[in-house]
Amino acid sequence: MSSPDAAAAQAQRHGRNCPKLDYSKAVSEQTPARGQAPPGPVSSEETRAPTESRALPKSTSFRTGAAIVIAVAIGLILWLALRNTGSGGAKAVSPADLQSLATSVGHPVFWLGQVDGDTNELTRKSNGTIIVRYLPPGVGVGAQGQYWSVATYPFPGAFAAIKRAFRAGGATEIKLAHGGLAEYLNTNPNNVHAAYPGIPYQVEVFAPAGQAVALVRAGKLTSFGGPQGGSVAPKPRAASAAELKSLARSLGHPIYWAGTKKGYTYELTRTPNGNVSIRYLPPGVRVGAKGAYLSVGTYPFPGALSGIQRAARQKGQRTIKLKGGGLALYNPKIPTDLHLAYPGSNYQVEVFDPAAKTRQLVASGAITIIR
Image (cartoon, rainbow, N blue to C red; front, top):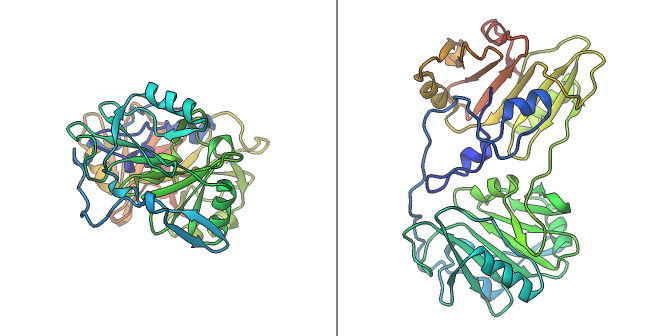
């Protein structure tokens, strides 16, 4: 009774995925699982990225040494061009080497954790910048190309600068565990900048195809000698029907629900990766309470209908044709859970009902867009 985490779907790289969450359980019971891969059949195929990233033109150089600074309203943020970091002086290192480095320099060294099969490439700049780049199998140290990269560089007042950049507009905020804060320009999800209170170093995460945002939101950013990884658990809140309608307008994409229910509390939960869930709490049940209740989740899923169609070919799956060309998918052995999608939409919907009436709800047209 689970569905894929959108950030995991978007952060596929070299045939590997970030861990997925047991989304259904998190929605219905407010008990998010960590690092578990869901068994639920939503997409029977994985779209794999090429095993070798495309190299950038040689004219695009790594500009850390130039210490390029861009003014963001009243704050200054150092923006790194991590897209093409191949350079002399790089070497392959182990996690133990990075731990020793952090100890010797006396400050945190950030990375994304060990990725199986990848080579950890370390580059140190004369200005104090430390870069860890992830090279997939077959890519040599110092190679030019677009690969995951994490830079740690000196920046007095880094945390305050991140906050000013967010207030200046045009950027999106990501709250990190341990009081950290990250932000990225809405026009560039390939680069995320992060900082932590009391640490005079700023961090940049680069990953192509918008994966940097997904990685940071998933809590992958961690360090030796400083803050460890982890994400901030979303807090549910009560929302009125009017507030849900306002949210749908502000997000600019559909949000689904099961309509109004007299006397019920609509519990709204939004996760950093874009999932929006509405849980129906009966009278007397408090927001955040444990227990399974009717829940409807809307979450990003590129090519959502195609995923449903592919999964429908698996043995034991059943479908329901919906108005407007939509398609719902369910497994008769799991009557509490159902997934659906519509043509042209990059959002998939999950309906969970502990009373096992998901098919009736969907077939009757009760699951609708909030308008």
